[in-house]
Length: 266
Image (cartoon, rainbow, N blue to C red; front, side, top):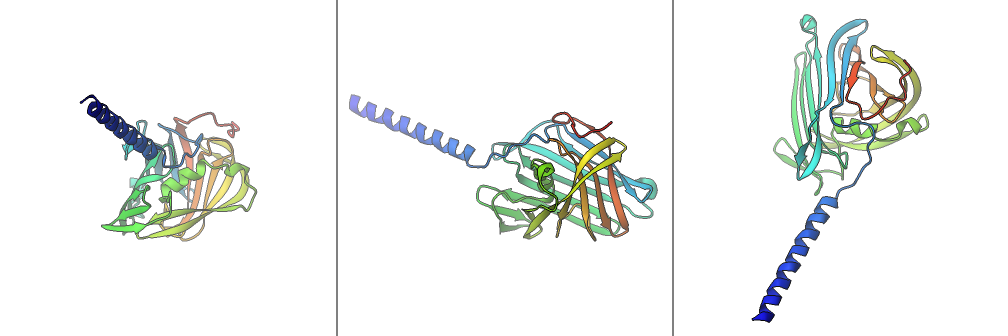
């Protein structure tokens, strides 16, 4: 009996070790990607301009509390752009995006998009199985590359990269899933500029996302983004061409940054 008891205890102990190892493997199977650019509570507010006219407002907000997907801590990120009500008789915009971004790996678990621009309407949601490399969207299952992005998670991922140290004309690529396909998303480094907006004057690096589909606007041409030339890589300005002409989003205010802004000049 004593031998049987010892065997039972050994089997139980072995099972516990196996379970523990399985949990450790599960927890550590994903990449770790360093991030000093952003964190919980970051809120960036913008004025959207069409020429000299203030046509709308928008924000990028990382909610202050974590959420969890598949047992992993995540950022809950919201992006919204609205036209001013006084101008909606000309062109109405109500665009809303969200992404659930893994804190340690900087990759998405979920993405949601609701577009209302004039008479144009689009709704889309994707859930990512980053362990097995699948995306689920509109009732279908799609094979995707490891650590595939949505367009919002790709933007935050780029902020973690040393883009301010890359030579001019450097182009690097990410993979972006949208609708039913994976797109190769290029990002080009255009150089450095000093930009002044309502929030201040900043040294910036200018990048051009070479968006094919699933962008932040229904783009008709190039999109340019001015990121602060420091560890935050905070987006100060965005310029793009949409159906009604060129539109810019200029930073008005910011709070909840992860650290100081070394690129601010005033």
